[in-house]
Image (cartoon, rainbow, N blue to C red; front, side, top):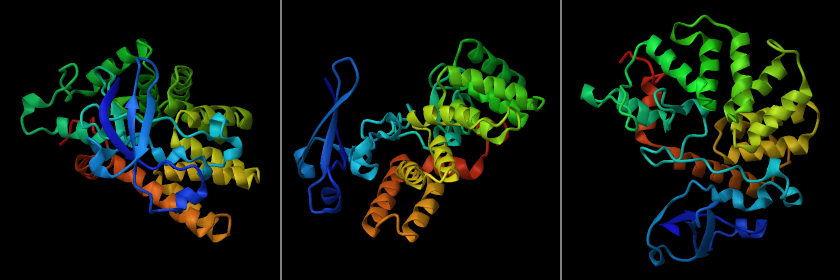
Length: 315
């Protein structure tokens, strides 16, 4: 069956198609038979479909020309996996890892905007988790107790977050980088993309564990395959340090098209030194802007401006 919604995307098969803007928009419908989602679509005018919305399937990635077709079956350079929607606002979760959070009570992942709005609801009785109905306003002690409960249940993101708490000394904890790394490693083994990235970064810095480029690459590649953009940029840096400029550029392209703003300065550099043509540079900028537009919401903007920590009990 399908979800009944046609989503607008851009799917092309070559650089020539990508450069032609006179084609009608391409619409995609998610189709599922109970297994992995499949996609179907067609070119056509907007009034020939039931509903047209921006899609989180990042259709810009479907044209492999942007990443190079020679390695199209290479998992590392395949289009990143789909980002899920926030289950409250149904807008794709942000690419920045600090712009979404798992609820400490039940482990559901929601965007910062929705979490902030819930915690600052004018009716205090409505400041509750929409999934388990627990209060979102809590003491440090209760927060840590609930977080540890999720860790003991094997929740990878809760384990990662607990590592972050020890790394920064949050919620009254004593800073402990070694314990933080142990939690990151545990969360990485459970499949957390953010934890995989942090473990890779630790092997790069050499502060907690010895520098080890092979382990750094291993963890960053695993995270990048899961769509973690910071890991992707870490790989770009690693390839640059090893003078693998072509691979550095490919990683940077993917990060930029995912909507990661810091990658755009590197894309500009590659354009300035002649490794990117004007058309391709423009296409990357447009695709990056589309990714940002897909994840934007007013609530997220307000949350980012008013609170560095949406779990803070201070208004």
